[in-house]
Amino acid sequence: MVEQAASVKVRPSLRWVYEAPSRFIAFGFGTGVLYPGPGTWGTLLGWLLWVVLWQHLPDLGVVLLLVFSFALGCWACQRTGDDLGVPDHGGMNWDEVVAFWLVLWLSPAGFWAQLCAFALFRFFDIVKPPPVRYADQRFSGGFGVMFDDIVAALYALLVMAVLVRLGAFI
Figure 1 (cartoon, helix red, strand yellow):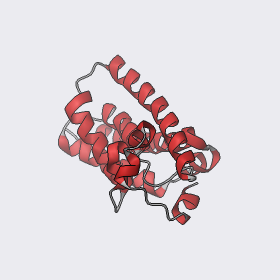
Figure 2 (cartoon, one colour; figure 1 turned 180 degrees about the horizontal axis):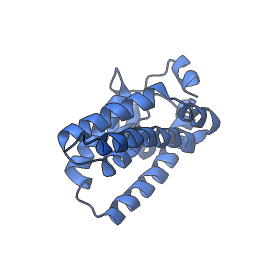
Figure 3 (cartoon, helix red, strand yellow; figure 1 turned 45 degrees about the vertical axis):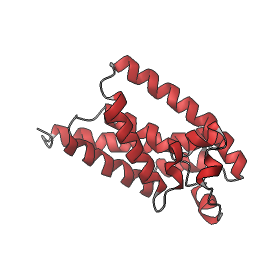
Figure 4 (cartoon, one colour; figure 1 turned 30 degrees about the vertical axis):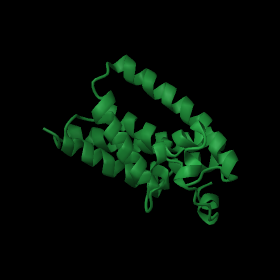
């Protein structure tokens, strides 16, 4: 799906994004129109929202936030993909926001650990090693847009766990 999205030269405007709630959500509150790297801008939005709003939630609150935000993203990305005629447009970055919340929740607190988690998540989201690439190609629609980023988040979490075990964030 990524290859298909990359070949289509659709670049929605901020005005277009703000015309529908689904677009506003799918495009990460408008950060998806920022170039280059709308996925990176979405991940940065996720980090900011985490630090300002979510990091002090109890674990059950975070789980509920993640489940709700994932379902909301499936709906918003499906609707927005339908509006664009591009199932996984690069500007749809709510998937990065939600997946990075998962990474931040399960990573050590502190700026350096979060920066490392950010770099790892962006690496795995961009490179898409198997099975991230498989998930990206196998699942379609809004669920597919959201799911491959969760798989990339799991890779980032695995590396973070190894780094924690090695004492990198003491």
